[in-house]
View: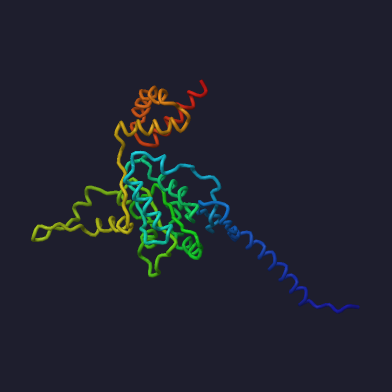
Length: 296
């Protein structure tokens, strides 16, 4: 007759319960980050899953080219030159693109990606809420041979938002040197990325010799945008600029010169209804007008 050992029963019960606890803990843990297929795309998005970040390939990106961007030649030249230097492993700057909405800020960055992807340029889009992860992103790509632009679109902060300080550190505030293969390109409608109030002027100090010095509050607001080495400003388009952009996109959609001329009146009404003559509005009109023309 086999001997009975109560201690063995207790051990078995303990191991069974421990295994059940481990199974429950594993279910609560975030899944492992998927392996990155660097050949799958030239653009990626930083995504979060149960608190863990990973790079998600973007298989289809906008096909816009530098030639598609009209009436921003100076801005285009500055961004393209900086990007070319970066791709060729020459000194280049982080870039802040600011100004009027719909004037081509984000499109210019996408067009540069299309122009230099064959030379190793890659784009990583990061939402404002994920700026705390910039250090993790840089660590992930620091040893890669490609050249990465971290892209923050339509960036602005409200007073007290913590992502502001995370971006400051990533730009030029960490004890560690910036990775050689990473630049940050950001677009914003605000030049200093933070709201500016009339009361800010009260913090300015006047010296005895008549000089004016900004107070701490103003200095803090300027300090983030100042860390971008290259500032590029965009301005609202004049009517003729707007119509020339309309013409470019209508021809892109197969319209001839006569049709472009016939569309002018409708294009001006379209802009008037939207209160804007931006490149984005021009693109939207050209899609609508050419589509209706084709289906008629």
